[in-house]
Image (tube, rainbow, N blue to C red):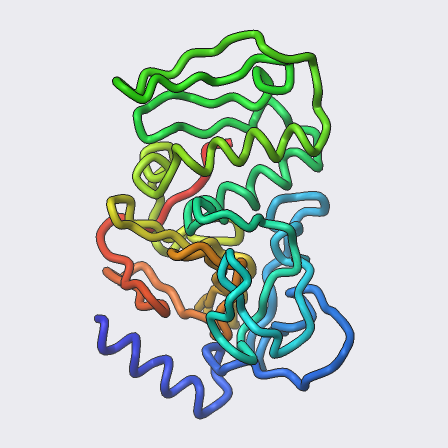
Length: 268
């Protein structure tokens, strides 16, 4: 299946299929992802609910076309990147890697829509870090000798964005693909849609998130994928539409081949 998928990508790139690389003209204006990656001929974008996580992901702000893709320390990973670089303050620390990019996008939307009680992520040791507890003034203390985590009332009630980002910074340190995969709900590849993820949890593991979806008259779908990476970098959107079907036992993406039960979804 790996080789079939690669062949499909090559064929699509040559004949205008959904995997055609969506190269854009270099212009000075910024765009949203929905504008940079239109549905190719014969396909249409799936409908999304106004105010939903899917709408948020479809409308991610992007840096201008062919912007360089940077690592967390400012060095360039890819000159004149042909995909898209998300124009969002993900962070500039080494801990902000692939799982953290997914956690950030999910948490950012929940915070913006004031769904505070739904913002919670587990650490690798199973400890559940609830944002509401943090915003109410409790802080997580980690015993580095045995990795036991406890809550203590150390601060004032504060739901500001600055305090929210401090919460996320701690989550980024102690959560990863292994913990995230244990939190998510397993689904079938044919069910994958915007907001779902492709993930192999582990040490190392990897995860990408679906930021858009197209379908044709036959019901065949293709997905637009975004990722963080290791070493930590800006969030990037790949320059291809990735076809997906129920029979796909693995999915080949730049930097990772997803195998096994890779299709997963957030529970809330």
